[in-house]
Length: 255
Image (cartoon, rainbow, N blue to C red; front, side):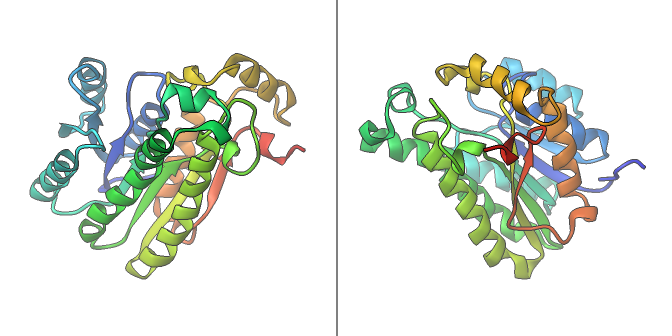
């Protein structure tokens, strides 16, 4: 049975190229019938993202650097002006300075830790705050986590504590926004060969190990993540909120 998102309008943040988790999600959301607003990070990223937005027939295409408050406000002003409402937001961005990501957590700099937390976690809260008044009939907020939030993953470094904060934020947002019919969830994919993952030391070994050990013995794809996100945005998931849902071929159940 086809999952229908006909009539739903949503914002997807985090597409960088065709390997992006956000691209797999955007494609699944569009195929299910949703109308999308798509963002790119900066002028350098725009030539890579705008053609993808065109493939999705996205009527709203705007820059968004989450470290620039005026860009975020302009984005939501445009959504309010053109649509007057919003049904979902998908947040799929993360960043940590290389030195802090590749070093020990105990050695992380205050500035690097704070920036990683701001871009990877607090930006989700800012998006939620601006989306709330537009979700007049309820809605869905989604963000991307990883197993390193729950347990120590070699070489994941400072992103582990940051993703743990993100998952905790999901629970608090779910509690605070639930009375308005707004559901908030995190999706935790298995290792994926994205541009962001390339900055993690030893990532190729991590990817191979996950495929070998996971109960289903196959790599997770951005399409797998997209299918789950389309479900979570849909009315079929109307009773699911405050959760972290894994899409990792079962890897997270292992010791």
